[in-house]
Picture (cartoon, helix red, strand yellow):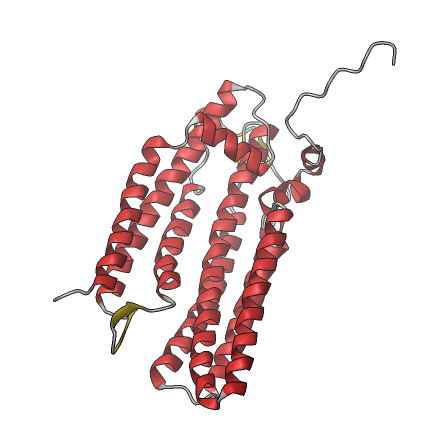
Length: 318
């Protein structure tokens, strides 16, 4: 079977992802990456080498499983590329389809999400060696770990994608694009339901810890895992929305200038809305949302202007 340059390009990209995923466990987590994770989740290490070693073991396990999942996802993307579903042909030759990047990211995101979810199943190494000393009662819910802008945002994005897919079904669109849009919408709905069920099952598992400090860190790792899982329906929701927009633009072209103007306005408005949501998400620091819900005192410390810095000593006599 002969391959054109788009297939070779996408296969090369998947191979690069596979190489990175294979090498990732060998260089992570290093002290710098452990410190970066601590700053992201808002928990101090305080120069505690034993704590840093324990967190490093947990992160190393997370990276290994995440890398294995990414490798499986990259391998799953190969037959998709070889099938020719991600290329288009016209009088100028063969090109990569506009939605190809989202489709290829799908298996990678799914694989990594499953991998990091598996990484939190076994008891932490320190619990296996020392034994549990404390356990939280009652258990938190998924809503305590994932910020509404991500958890509820995934539902809203998929709902919009489904509405757009239904609208495409009423337009004079060819059978191929209509099937793609319908399949993307159904996949987004299925991904949302599966991820919410899996997340609920994971959060219901016991959460033993040897100290309150390590329980906070376990919450941080759980929060990151649930956020990784939420990215799966987000990805499929984006695919459903993008496929609907592309099919709608193609249909609007047959309606004349007015249809094209309306379609372009809708596409640009949706793109702008996604940028606004992304900016808000970065501003509210969703990686620390679990602190706000489960450890409010620790969260209050992260609200200081110079979190982690040593306050200057007050001048004598003041």
